[in-house]
Length: 164
Image 1 (cartoon, rainbow, N blue to C red):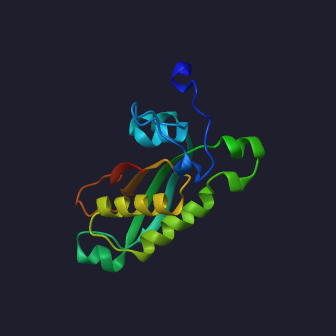
Image 2 (cartoon, rainbow, N blue to C red):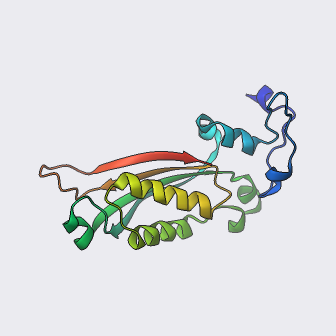
């Protein structure tokens, strides 16, 4: 692993990555951030901010009654980013504010209506990646504990991973 990082800067500040040069012939990335962005499997090496079990009451569902009456959704998110600067400075402005992100998810899900939770997950992930440029990617889980299945179950749900 250490050999893979030789000659690469530790990280780039926000916006700096667009001005960095690429080694055109080899296609070699010039920052660790670009390594993560170029290969979704490398997200496992990124720092993570985790949100688990956020309860949102919203109007999504295939059936008209679900969209009219609304129901509970349980959202969990893993936000892939660099936490080094926040950890070293002890300053929230250098991190992603998970409290703020919880409110963004809640408001977005309440203000929009989707038939499928797959579509809701896709839209929430896109909103987070749009709104927070410091995110490399997002793993989003949306569970529907009151899914109209007609059988007892804890929940039905989806999980997606989206990167820039």
